[in-house]
Amino acid sequence: MEGLLNQWLWQPEYWLPPGITWKDMRMDEEMEKGSRYPLPRDLLLTLPLALCFIALRYVFERVIALPLSRRLGVRDRVRVRVAFIPKLEALYLKKRKQQPSQSDILGLEKRCSLTRRQIETWFRHRRNQDKPSSTKKFCEASWRFVFYLTAFSAGIASLIDTPWFWDLRECWQGYPKQTVAEAHYWYYILELGFYWSLLLCVSVDVKRKDFKEQIIHHIATIFLIGFSYCANYVRVGTLVMLVHDSSDFLLESAKMFNYSGWRKTCDVLFVMFAVVFLVTRLVVFPSRIVYTTLVDSLDFFKPCFGYYFLNTLLLVLQALHIFWAWLILRMVYKFVFLGKVERDERSDEESEIEEEKEEEECSWEQKKGTLNSKLASLANNCVLNNLTHQRRHMSYRMANTR
Image 1 (spheres, one colour):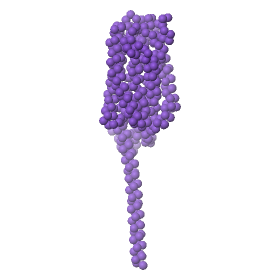
Image 2 (spheres, rainbow, N blue to C red):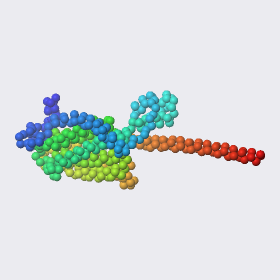
Image 3 (cartoon, rainbow, N blue to C red):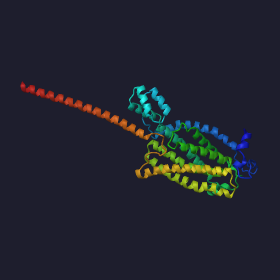
Image 4 (cartoon, rainbow, N blue to C red):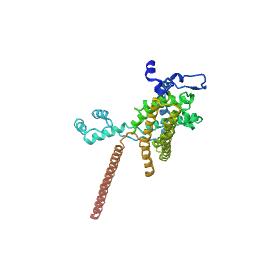
């Protein structure tokens, strides 16, 4: 297997500039203590690390995030529990998010002895049962908030004293024979392990409207981190990760307070996130990082397959940034002209119209029940008043007769 990988995958002309081989990337005696050359086998550590992240997340959400959600006042919406009807359940499991067709409803009316209205109501309530609760969404957001905040703080601390943090042309000085400090090695490994864990948990996490874009983002990020480590684009790679982490923890904190009902705090954090996101993803990232990988790097080495592959992945990320910026600007428009953020444009994949209908239906039923009870009470009072009035009138007439 190692021979096949060396023959087909790890060809130096794929990953390294012309004239450079993997032998040139080996350890030597002149290296600083605590530094290393990146090797592809180092990335094998990220897979068991991803499993450790999943286990740590499980413990964190139940031990820390769940009690915190209760203290912050997170309240789950009470959903109507439907009766178990085997034939309806079988069709629901088959279609899931899709509405039952007209022919399906006609067939169910005959087989289940239910009206069309009852069947549609059952499916609506059944879908609502599977929708994630606010507590679940809060726990997920708090886990990502803790990681992104920790990663951003660690990234700033490890990069603030590096020359390429201030001058991006330093990313290419001496490339590819650049040593990797121990702090940057772990920064890379932990980030890659975390994104592996996000990709592995994507099927059980809350699905959002940009679910497909999130999958593309995770895959592109994993490829970008792994490839940039193998080809020793570590310096520019650390800057890419730092730019992304700078706004992500603000978004997750805004979500946490949104689920908790702290609207003003959520709005303030959202504005901060929007400003940081638009500046870092639409200004800093393309004008500084993408520019240095496309243009500045050519002053230090000749382009190879790795050069084109790296820039392709960066441009894919930039396309996703533009898509999310459009969603954020829609939210900014609502915030400016409506006075608040009504809901996250990347909100959960829920049929909010159906929920509104359900709430209207439930409120109408409640109002109708209250009205009926009031009418019944009024009718009873009227009857009692009439009986009392008639009794008094009879007593008065009897007294006069006597």
